[in-house]
Image (tube, rainbow, N blue to C red; front, side):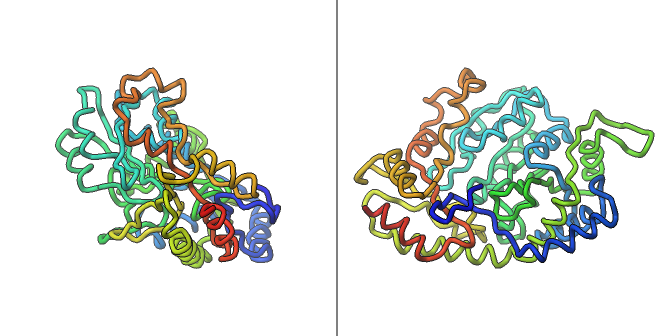
Length: 370
């Protein structure tokens, strides 16, 4: 990721002072335990559980491997209902497990899987629903769970964007059978690369811990066809350090969000995505929609910003269903996904990160205002 001060990217990870990280590295060097469930790994699992308000959490080398393993742990087969409006890792995890994704349209205001469209997509082969808390905005968890309970389906949440998001009852990560987090460098909380699965009980966590370590139960017993999904001690140490600063980072993100809204209020043809007034947001992204009344197309605005050293992202364009491995599926037909297609063609996520200052926000907003 570039450090050129003239370039502003959609997100830049918060990096604590280097001298705070060095003591962690020295301890790793002294112990010579670089991975395999070392002390920092164990400390981070405990610390994250306490911070997020969940009891059982299993760390992973990245969020994609965590998604693949979550599906394995619940023995999901057949068809899984999911969203076309996400990063491709969501549906790729299904293909890696030999599962057929069935795409369902999204809600216009939340960008999340539309519960009203789920039941019509259920077949005798459906075994699970895999929604995404898009941009960190909570899905309609109650409606999704009611459908899952009625049809005896599992629910795995792709919660890659949802670190620290809460509803009235606590962490949204407690919903569903499993929730999967990403700790990639672009996320609100990161470990350089990393991820985690939030588990409902100790037994499930134990199975997941076996699966992420080649299936080993002990030195001589392999109990499942596992994978190598372990987080290293260096990544875990960085996570422990990041956790000390995450509340400050979240507070700064909220200020950036509010400042954008103030600057962009009244710009004709630009609509900021609705504020989530029900749940505690993490302000992971700042999406705007470029509408018909604006002076140029979304793609022209995208290019204008890039030409001026601002690098927004069209999350999520193209849709997953536009890619060749998915576009032939019946559920990928454009007639089934009008809301997702409309959003993908109008969305633009502006830079948002803790160190984005008011002057930079002003520059970006003036370029948009024209």
